[in-house]
Amino acid sequence: METNSNQPYPPLRNIEAFPVHHQGQTLICLHDPLGYVNTEITLSPAAFFIAVCLDGNHTLRDIQLEFAREFQGALIPSEQIEKIVEFLDEHGFLLNERFEEIKNRIESEFLQQTVRLPYHAGQSYSSAKHELGAFLGSLFTKPGGPGPLPDKQTPTGERMVGLVVPHIDFQRGGVGYAHAYYRLYQCEKPDTVFIFGVSHQGGSTPFILTRKHYSTPLGTIKTNQECVDYLSKNMGIDLFESEIMHRMEHSIEFQVLMLNYLFGTDIQIVPILCGPFADNEYETPPDSVPDVEKFLRLCIDYIEGSKEQILILSASDLAHVGQRFGDPIQIDDTIRQQIRNRDDEDLQQALNMDAGCFYKSVMKDKNQRRVCGLFSIYSTLRLIQHKAERSEFLYYGQAPDPIGGIVSFASIAYFG
Image (tube, rainbow, N blue to C red; front, side, top):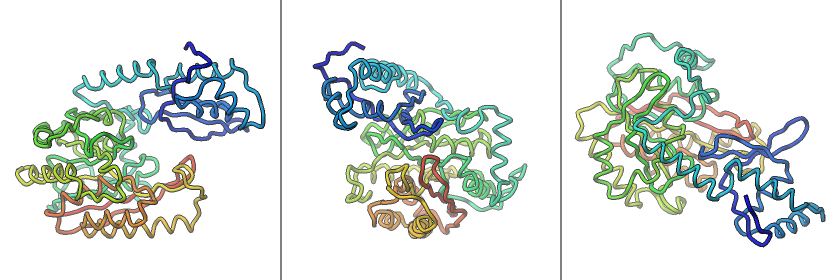
């Protein structure tokens, strides 16, 4: 990459950075949360400082001055800065033409596919069919689990209309998944499942659709094209504008995998990612956002006009607290109990099937715990309010974050 000492360097992309410890040294690992670049790279603290200076305004001379201020007058040669910038550029971590080419190629390939491939297979779970089946079966028999899943479904006649399930990885939240899906397996099999997932990387619309079918190592679950077409044609805004967010988002993928494990491919889904509902979520309740209200009303209209048995599922975690998430605190028993107390307040509103009160409960401290399933749970509660007759609490758990923090999650079932 050719540079000019008087020209600013291209900016560093919006990436995740976290410390790692290697052979007694603390390094900084850079990770692309959007998955355009699969390779993680590590930098020394000094090199990371250079990377942080890449904001699109700093020239080589500017960076040398900033470095000297930060490191007590130390001088860094131009060649060393150039080497760091070149390293970042080669790996696609700079916002420039090279990255745009990578981004455009990946997005074009994804949008041309009719099937959404299992992005996390081979990473979060095995891509080998028999090994994966054994692993998913073992979730039910973990300590605290509901017990082995019966070989054959024998429904009790109950009709489940809603389900709140974790979307944390199976290794940490497997028992929460097991309680939710064991209970679903006891009920009548749904024909179509609306899955409200969380778009962790945002989006340009409150809800993000895809027509793609969802593939897993166990088979391919078809997307209900009739429903997706109904929602998109009547909405009035482009619900596919941020469709690329479906490519690597795990919140829906993990649910599809569990549904596939339970019911094979004899089921359809409506995959819906929830992006931000408003620019200022603290001051703007969802029922005052026209696009949110219209979309949820369309979902309700479709469900009421359908002869299918439809399940509304929220793929949602709760609190995200600790250093990993920007809190300058260490997690201890007191913090865990505080999180549990606040989670219980929110979950009580969810058990009461009151979407508005659930939202208010989370927001009474401006969502200080970073409840990432806020919008997906709210949407699910709105859709089941006219159908559910009772709720059933299934599971609550807290799991450590490997970088430092805690994530909480719960499972709740609704019956009509």
